[in-house]
Each structure stands twice: as structure tokens, then as C-alpha cells.
Amino acid sequence: MGERKLIPIVSAADNNYAPYLSVTLKTILDNLSSDYDVAFYIIDDHITSESKEKLEESISNHTATIDYLEVDSELYANVMESDHITQTAYYRISLPDLLEDKHYEKVLYIDSDVLVLDDVSKLYETDIGDKVVGAVIDPGQALVHPRLGIETEDYYFNSGLLLMDLPNWRKAKITEKTLTFLEEQTDKIIYHDQDALNGTLYEKWYALHPKWNAQTSLVFERHQPPNDYYAKAYKEAVNQPSIIHFTGHDKPWNSDEYHPYTKKYLEELKKTPFYDEATKKDAVN
Image 1 (cartoon, helix red, strand yellow):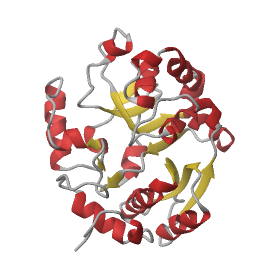
Image 2: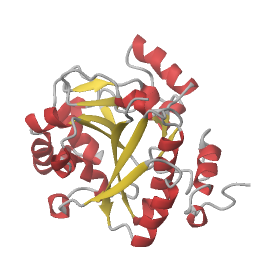
Image 3: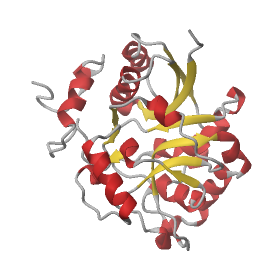
Image 4: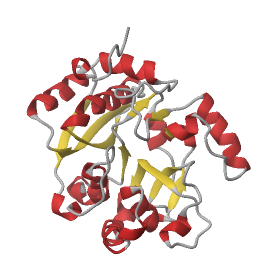
């Protein structure tokens, strides 16, 4: 038998999101090829020791590790936040610096409000060429670069899933440029870190299939695809998503709004040590 390959996967959470992060970690491992192990890195925004113990327990049936990364929060002291986007969301911008001593060529960043339904090793092994990141188009914001003051025919991506080429990121000084964009283009920022990353990475990102980041607006087919390729790809993603991303205010744990994957999500949440913290009433019958 050959040696198992290691996939470094990063997410970010504060203590309020720790229960939902456990679903992300668990469903990644439940669907992963047996040829791979995972090293999880969590960008830690004051996760308690009790929650960390429960996160460890969530992955105890698999070959995986969890390490925690700390960001200099002063870098993001003045960023715009909202009721469902906190300062933690911006920390992915510093990720290549945080992992500099690990010498990884690429890492997979995944938000903590997802349900994984497929083997992410297939995603990790995607060849993105000389691009800095692989990402998925944001159906609701595909053509908004003019709002950011940018002339390009490129599409706008969702930053909740990023396959990051770390050498290319560092070479292009993306962290520094994104922080500068946040500082100098405050009046243009609506969608937080995502706007800043798109303002920096346009024409430097590789378009992954939308099934790898099936956002809520895509699942409900709320937006017209920008071309024939995406018309087909959107339908494929809706019919057979690989990662469900619960974007927006309505999450499975806090809303009665219908979503076709809420029941499945809550079933997975109940299997974690955090299920008693789920705030949704009658979460799973």
C-alpha cells in the first residue's frame, strides 16, 4: 500500500461557531477517500478549551489532527462587520503568513457553515495552473466588479471556499494588497473580506465547478447564469452538490426558512458533541 497523502484544511471560528465548525470537520472526514489524511488548522477567535475538546471528539473516529492559529486582530480592528459576518471572516486573508513554517504548496480553506457531501480530495487535487486561488463564482454577485472600481470581464467569486496556492499568493503579495484594499476602498466595501479579495484577485483565480460551493442563492436558483457554461454547471450543482454552503442570514440552526439540506445538516449536528447547544427548537425529530 502507498503512503497516505496529507491535505491541509483551514477553517475559522469564534466560540459561537464552534458547534457548526464541528459539522464541517466531521462531514469532510466522513466523505474523504481512505488514501488521505487531514491536518486541520482552525483560525482561532477565542474558542474555549471546552469547545476545543468537543471539536477533538468530533473527529476522534478519523485520522486527523487539529491545530489552532492566532491572527494579529489589530490588522482587522477597523473592518466592517454585520450580524452574520464577524471579524473572524477576514482572518483567512492572513492564512499564508500563518502557515509559512509548514511549507505547504497549497491548502484548502472552507467556511464553518457548510455541509460536505463529497470527497474533498478530488477538489484538493484540482490543477489550478498558475492562478493564486481556485474558487467558485458567486451567483448573486457575478458581475459586480464595476462597484469595486475595477474594469474586467472576470466574474466575482465567493470566498467561503478557496483552494490556495501559497507560493503564488505570497509572490503576488495578496495579503498586503487585500489589507490595503480594505483600508483605502472602505466606501466600496459591502461584502466584507469577499469584496477585498475580489478587488485583489480578479483575473488571478481559477473557476472551480459550482458544486464545490453550492451557495443558498444557487440552490434556490435565484440568479440567471452569466453564460451557457454556467447554465449547465448551475443545474449540475443543484442536482448533485458536493459542498452545501449556507450563505446569508438564515442558517439551519437559527431559522425556520426552508432549505432542502437543513434536515440533513441538523442530523449531522446531532451526531456531534455539540448537539445540545443547537439553538433551533425541535432540531431533529
